[in-house]
Length: 103
View (cartoon, rainbow, N blue to C red):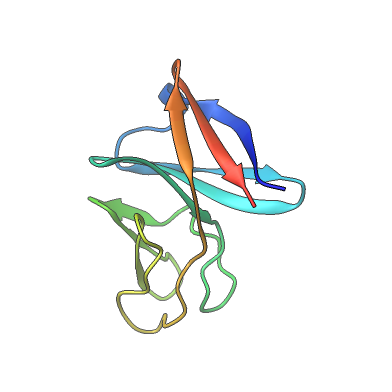
């Protein structure tokens, strides 16, 4: 069942940054980009490295381990060594809160 979960306040995520959030054992990254808020799996698909310390520029996250990059909006893998896309989650922002639809 798809449900919207209150994940955090909008002011908890700095612009061009992310926070790690966990819900029922699922590790999710919540991003604040120039295009709005987005959510993806927190772990890089290359070697299960957390993206929490990764560099966010515009709508791209760079993995801190090997420098692979992902499009935050779509989860698409953009550069080697990553080739598998990140899972993304729908996000809704209302009343200063970020809600994530956990599927």
